[in-house]
Image 1 (cartoon, rainbow, N blue to C red):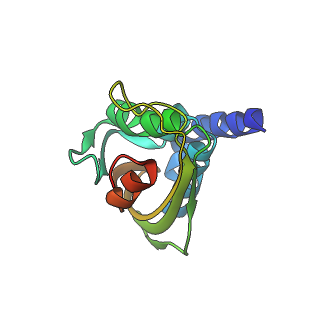
Image 2: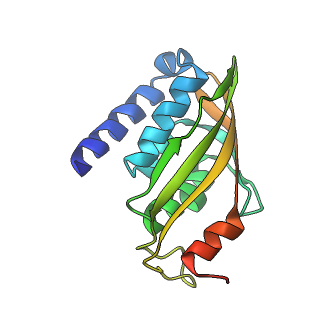
Image 3: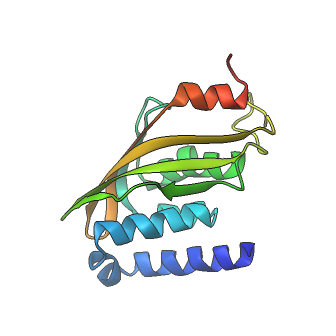
Length: 161
């Protein structure tokens, strides 16, 4: 099953890097494929859906990440490493425009990997809801903003009471 997820992620990354195909994708198709790459636990495939100069704001991190590599390394890889069984699923019908999409979601997993050198794995399961806003140009995410209950997330992991 893990191999199948990897293959899907790899194929999606190839499709996205072919600019003619990417330009023809609707915002919904980009979002669906992007979430599929996250769910395949493939940070590189997920990052392939981003423009080189993407701005990625994970509200709990505070500072937006600038550029595809920063978004991949400081957000996507962080979550994929800390929760290798993660799932990220749309929980309602998204709102789509010609160059963007907004959707509610549920993110869940088990914290079996370290979040960083000072934050070891807790072994605890978590599940939280949020909303994402994406602006998409030529089939690439140019801006992504994720808003969710960071306090509730930290409580589930046992970091705070």
